[in-house]
Image 1 (cartoon, rainbow, N blue to C red):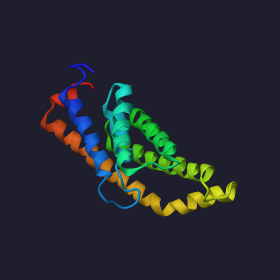
Image 2 (cartoon, helix red, strand yellow):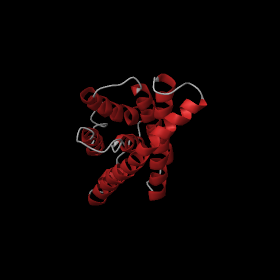
Image 3 (cartoon, rainbow, N blue to C red):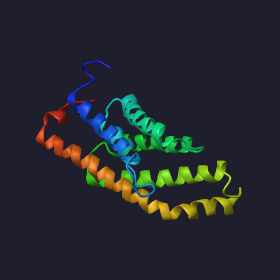
Image 4 (cartoon, rainbow, N blue to C red):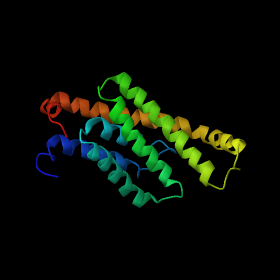
Length: 176
């Protein structure tokens, strides 16, 4: 990265993503975490695609080194990468409706992919449609935490950055 890449806007966006990542280390209800918010935020605000994927992934990976890994982490990271893409596609205009729809979409995507992986590659559910249905059914009580957490952290991250931009309008002009 050169000095044109490392701007105050880049530092603020990157800092917010890393702060959100480290919030994962604070005790919280199951699935009430800023994972989707980090991915959506990076996808929405970084204009360089490789940076939009890299920064949130590095932040997530660092905290996962502390939290630990499990056999279906690949599904979590696949979801995460796809959610960055949702941020790039759905939040070109920072409108509340776009951000809300992207956040709900991210929650559903995460639910579908990660619980499919638990069924397909785990030992808890029988292979077949009844096992798949059981996997999704067992995950329903956690979905509301995922949805509420995503909406909370998305609101916090996007709202905070937009508030900072009103105080420092030069941040709106710089592409990162």
